[in-house]
Structure formats: C-alpha cells, structure tokens
Length: 141
Image (tube, rainbow, N blue to C red; front, side):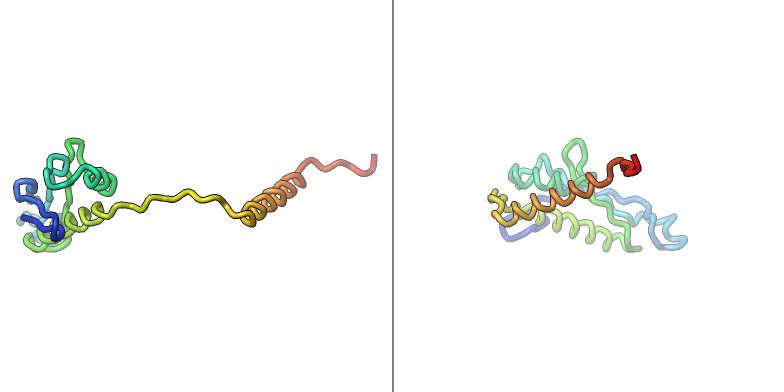
C-alpha cells in the first residue's frame, strides 16, 4: 500500500516493478547487478483515482504515460536497488500529489482604460517606425 495523503492510497496490485541493469555509476558492478528500477503504475485502471485527477496526471506525466494508461517511472541514480526503488516510489507519490491540486479557474477581466490607451499608443509608434522604412524618394527631381 502506497500512501499519497491521508485520504488517498494506492493498492499494491496497481504497482509493478521491473529491475534492469543501470546506466549510472557502479564500476564493474554495473555490468552484473540489476539496480535500476522501472516502476509501473496502472493509473487508467486505478479505482482509487477519480477521473479529473487521472486527466491531470496524464498531462503531468507526459512521455511517461503509456498508450495503455500506465505511468512508468525509472530510477537508476544510485548503486543500491533498494534506494532506487524508494526514489521511484517517491517520484510517483510527488507526481500524484501534483495531480491532486486542481488549477484555479481563470476569471476573464476587462482591460483597464489606461492599458488600452497604452497598447494603442505603442501600436501607433510601431506603425510609424515601420512606415519610415519605405522606399526613399529623391528630392533632386
């Protein structure tokens, strides 16, 4: 059981771990021991996450979201398999916590009178600059 906060936790059947050889430091040990962890969370099938949280999680996960609706997190920073496993779980918890925060709805406001005047003045100045870049007429004719 992986606790996200006091109201939400993830069951063990939703998580699967795969261990592979790491790309990181370790000397000769790196060629023998499978220390890298690939943590897979079946987010789409999870009964613990409501639909809006799943949608935000999908957006936050980006490339880590697979076509079948799973989040894959890879950790290979340390030489220790246990520490990499712990780091992958921490990253997943942090990602889900970010998805729990609902973004504030933007309230449309009318631009102030002063800001409208400043914008129009800046457009006029910019137009004058561009108008001055035209072809130069000879004054000798």
